[in-house]
Amino acid sequence: MSTKRPSNMSDKDRPKHRRHKRDNELDRAIAIVNLGGDIRAAAAATGVSEARVQQACELHRLRQLTKRHQRHK
Image 1: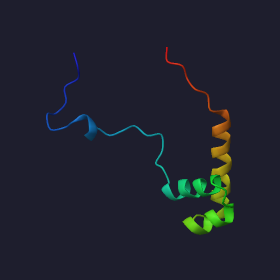
Image 2: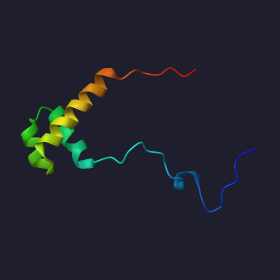
Image 3: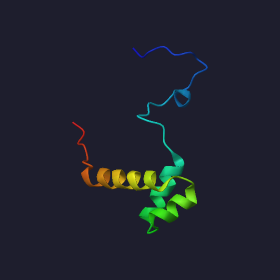
Image 4: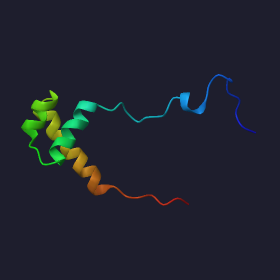
């Protein structure tokens, strides 16, 4: 039996579980660097400090390298 939910609440209105709030400006900066821009240009274009862009890019690169595809059992 499924869980009861108020009739005025659909699936798409249900809050999604997110690990952390995304920082769109930081994501844009990472994208700029990935597309061949340098860190200073990405920081200037997005208004994020160079140190944060540098750190975010390093983390992003690490995550990409260590990503493992999980098999569904």
